[in-house]
Image 1 (cartoon, rainbow, N blue to C red):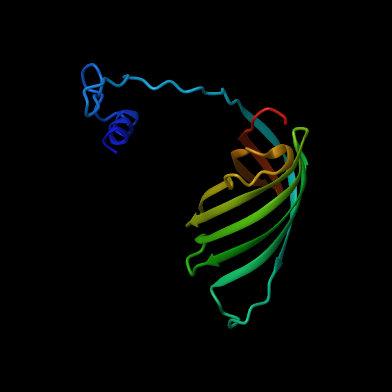
Image 2: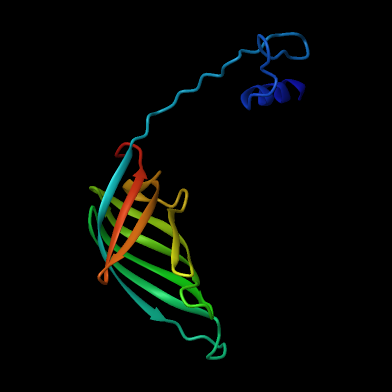
Length: 173
């Protein structure tokens, strides 16, 4: 147990003062732990998408502050495919202030690789100033998209939706 604690402290950088950490029986541990690392390149994908938002009926009163929507998207560009998702949104009494969360499952081809992956959205609007985070759910990639990680930026200009997707992915299986 003591040896494991010393190794863990060495890995995180505690106890590597001087010439290295020592175990209970005075065996010196190496200062550096060498691990095999693969270089992962970040790739950029971009294009457009259309989205259909359908309000979902709810048993709540008509003036409920939380709205629920189903999402259907069609992607064009480096990502060719569709997605289905659910969104919860809240607007406030202050113009330009609102928030939403959404989850969507994307099915398609990303730069020649076919599979599925999930996206998680968190967005706020603070008196007109937007803040948006759209990230790939860890370990959600399937097929040739296993290992996919990344973030997607969404822009809306003149009613048209655009995406810029920065992602990493291992070699093709």
